[in-house]
Structures are given as structure tokens and as C-alpha cells.
Length: 573
Image (tube, rainbow, N blue to C red; front, top):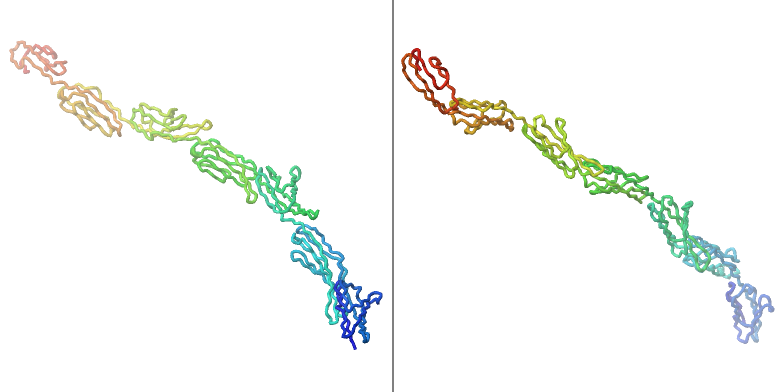
């Protein structure tokens, strides 16, 4: 007796292939009749094995098959067919296109079981297991296709005879776009000097346009559509925030995306600096100069002879002509680490005051003269002053017949000028007038031969020096020459030295030759009553003779070279 077995590959998921099979052992010709769940009117087939591609749930039900072998009994078998529906994804959605950095939301609408499982796959290794999902801070790499698989799970009878699990799924996909918005690069902080040009800077890869604005009120309101606009000649009121917006577009969408940033601008004020100075100063005095600028944080000076200083007020003591010239000052203004300056300069003229050259000390003797000398390059005048109210407007005063009372310190002041300032320099000459000892040796002398010569010099000298034409010398205060002869005639000079100052006087001494005389008669004896004549003859001497007879009695007179004697008695001559 023949036997048969009917089977199917179910349960299966919607869309799968359904296979119905009959296995028998009949050895004769056999016919087969399949009838579907709705009876022959709904489905019938005479094939041994049936195949249904893309099976739908409507095929579910009990299928019967009749096996009729020739010459044998008819065999009827039934098969339960279950085609379970797949989930239905009715819609996929996303909020794209969206801008880079925002959130991309994806979602779905599906007819499915409560136990359905969702599985999303997308670009940049994206995955999710929820019905809807969000991608925060979406980047352009997230653009592309997103697929969703929804799976229904059927477990146990009647899905499986061995308690296995049957899963049925559906898949759909959609595209999502993220418009790239590259980083907006700016200079976040600007600190620049007043009167400079402010060059705002913005760059962003892929940006199609830019827009700058500021919060300043008119007339300083600022707008620009340039990426790198320039504001010329800025001032402190231009300080503040400048906002820039970069715009991004995509050819696949009308969406316009933006990136914004803020540049904070600080304008360092540069107020004028006003310098002051003494303008003209004399050499060796103190030159001062200073500067003032509103809100200046500091000052920097530069000047001649390597001068530099950070002081607001400066002094140069004992100033020299090399320090004359223009002094430049920078007033410094700061915000943070940025310093700005304003510059000015002021001249400082140094009137040269050269040294006054003099003869430091002059020593002369009383009654002598002296000449002072003063010399200073470029001096325009000289003024001397000294003891006894002495003044003279001359570089080289001349003195004559000096006296000790004129001794003392004489000061000369030379004046110098640059046309705006007159300066002075002084020096001193010490004048010492040493006293002398005036004296007089008296009148010239006429002396007889064999006379003594005595001359007396003044007292108080430090040295005496006698000399004469007769080769006489002596260093005593007084001179004494006994028993003069004509050979001692001549000029006798006395030099009196008082501490180096000498005075002189001289006297002429004439020594007469000895008188040679004769008396006639020389010796004679006469008688009483007799007359006798006496005759005296004289030579040499001054030749201006005077005769005196002694005794004057018995002769005619006491004088005269010729006498007559009348002796009245014995007379011895």
C-alpha cells in the first residue's frame, strides 16, 4: 500500500518563497491535486510540488493534497501554511538639509508589532536602534543615505515547531544633507594705536559671503560685506565689539547656514605731547626740560651726546655745549601689552662759556707798572674789578705807578651771548705790590783831599749794595771811606733791597787835589822897625783860594796872599 507525506517550508515571512512538497512511495503512475484554503475555487493545482514566489500573508491557511497512485488507494494529506507579514515602513523623514554643527534628526513611521526592533545604518559608521534618532553637532561627513531595518520577531508555536524564532523585517532608505560651515577664523582681540588703520580679518573655507556689524552709534556705526574690511584712522571711540557672520550655501539646497564670531577692538589713545625747556642755558649751569601728555603712561627722551631718559622731567647739571640740540620725546600710551607713542621735540641751546685765561699771579714793586691780560674765545666783553673800587671795561687793563694799597685779588668777568642769552665766566689775578724804601743820599759832595767820606743808607732794608765808579763796593747800611784822595772822586751808588724790590740813589763826590803852596820868605830875621813882605803862592786844590793868616797881628790883614809885616817885637813865624 502506497504512503505519502505533505510538507512546506513555513512558517515564512512575507515576500519569501513558499514551497509545498509531496513525498510518496507509490510505484505506479500518480496524480496530485492541491486545494488552497479557500477551496478549489480559490486555488488548485495538479503539480506534485508547488512554489510561490513573494509569498504574501493571504496565502496562509490549510492546504490539502490528494495523491492518487494507479491501482492503489487515494491518499490525502494537509499542510498548514503561515506567511507572516513583514513590518511596513510607511515613511522615513529627516530635518535636513541642516547646517554643520546643528542637530540632524531622522525618524520613521511604520506598521509593526510592539516588539519590533529598529536598526539604522548611515554614513560615518552611524548606527542607532530607535525608531527616531538625532545626530548632535552634525558634520558634513554625516551627509548621505540612511537605511532603516524594522524587524518583527515571532517566537514559538505556531511560528516554529521546535520553538525557534522567526524574524521578519523591512528596509527603507533616505538621504540627508549637512551643509558644510567651516570654522570662522578671526582675530579675537585687536589692540591698535590711534590714527592707525584697523584691518578686520575673517576667513572660512567654503563661505560664500560675509557680513560685519558693530554696536556703535552713528556716526561710528559700521557695516561691511567684505571678509577683511579696513577702517582708516581709528580713534578711541572706535573701540568695541565687531561681529562677523559668514554665510554658507549648497547647490543641493536653498538653505543658508551661518557662523558668527566677535572681534574686540581696543584703540590706544595717542594724545599730543607738549615739551617744555629752558631754551637757552649757559655752559656749566643746569638745563631742564620736561613733557606733558594727557593719560601718558610714560615718556622716552632721546637727545645729543647719547642722552636718553624715561623721566618726565629731566635735568642736566654742569651742561656742556655738546649737549645742545634738539631733544625728542615720545609719550607712551598703553593698553595691555601694546604701547603707542606720540612724538615731539624741543631745542636746548647751550651758550659756550669758555675758560677765561689770565695771569694767575702778578708781583711787582711799588712805583712799577703792571698789565693784566684776559682772554676767552668768543667773549663779547670783559669787566675787571678789584680793590679800592677798581673797575675797568677792558680785557687788558694797564696800571702805572703802583702802590701797596693796590694789592689784592682782581676779578675779570667775560660775557658770552648767542643773541638770546648772555652768560658769564670769571677768573682772578692776584696782584702783589711790594713796598720799596725811598731814600736820598743828599747833595753831591766836594771834599778836600785827605777828608773822610761818610754816607748813611735808610734803615729796614733786607740788603744793601754800594758801588761806585772808583770800584768801591760794600754791603753795609752806611759807607765810610777815610782820608780821601783825588782818586776817590766819582759817583757812589746805593742799592737798597726790600724783599726783592730795589731803590737806588747816588751822590757825586769830588776830592780836590792837595794844595801846594809857597811862602816867601820862608824863614827870616829882621830888625825892629824893618818891614818885610810875605808872599804866598798856591796851586792845585779848587784853585779858588782863601787865605787866613794866624796870628793876624803884626801884619796888614788876616787874609790875602800878600802881606806886609811890621813887627813890633820878636815874632816867631
